[in-house]
Image (cartoon, rainbow, N blue to C red):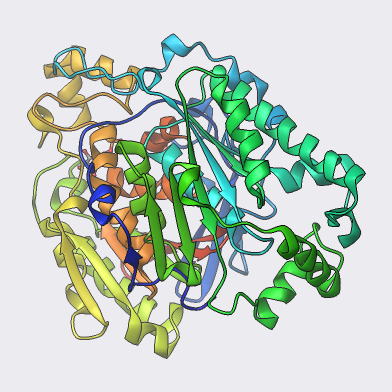
Length: 537
Ligand code: F6P
């Protein structure tokens, strides 16, 4: 899948897809994830485990703190953690789970789910996602054509921009009910089996509709849905609901529509297939009845040739345009992403927020230590030649990358990566804010995600301006390091780890700590390294 979703995208109706990248926003959620912080001190590696439990952020140790010293335990090797394997994936809506998994989430009263709440003094608008129509995205395609990959990524993205979204994967329903089935179960001439499969699809569809009726905004029905008849069943069922819209996403294979040996190998590891032969036989059955989406089937996106060709049909409106723009940037190549705050700034050293000052002496030492570590230890020779670095346009971030100049592939400055704008509180300490603006301090502590500093920004505002950055990161195929700021990195981290936005303002992104995320088709692995400098504690 090396060229999956690359540049030369062939688009019908391109004008429809790039429309709305502006107004709007988000919402709600909760929970946590088991994390490991790892410290590197020259030759030694340290790590700290923080257990977390959902809903009780205060108890997690994820509150804003610059010091990791108290919970660091010596260990001899680096600890890695995967966000998709081994760790319970805690987002209440995903990924790829059946309806039954999180009933408590679904009972959240709709009235509580405002998507843009301002501070009492900043006079913002309040939007409510519940005013919009419900959307059901229906995946279409042969087995092994990346449907689940697209469904999961789209779901994660939509959650991050504030839509309650969940993918309902038919394979999971089937595996839960029948276990792994041989290819003959998919023989279209066997009426009994066919009816069982239709029933599973309708069950998943009913769950999707129930999810939407209880507060979800978007449901993704992730199955093959390979025939016109079957899609008509979906249309008929959805037509009974008020204000529900459909969008089909068809994922086709490469030009010859054959999978590579590597892809076959990966598929045969899935619990859904016995082995390669079983997969091939099932494919034959599907091919005998497969019908690609036709123009009279309403709104759809067809992705073929691993993303090089995209056909859009009847794509109207804000949400569909967003989904199209996102899908156009996807690819499945693995690559590392490094997130790191700038070195300690002069303001950090005296506990002031905001400003645009330069690095302290310690910060300068960090920038050198980080460069040495990255180029000499973390990256292979070819990776360091390819390394792309993005910074914000703020002094402390730009100064941190100075030692990388001439040693990496490209350095790029992004205004969108600037730290959250603290408005009237810029340049103050938290104690001073509490004293001078007690009401602001109080309101922020009640709803840090949505609170907007007077003449400044909220975390939601930061997420909005980071959206193009997410598209660019998705598109990126080279190793990438982002040197930015606490609030900005919290928001990016929440996206990649699919964490509820409510948690984003409290995530631990300490100074002088390098976070490595290995982005894989399904999830990412995380490694944290604390960079220590000689002469500094
Ligand atoms: O203190 C460093 C800093 O980057 C400030 O400039 C910024 O206002 C703050 O962190 C964001 O963190 P919080 O949202 O927890 O106040």
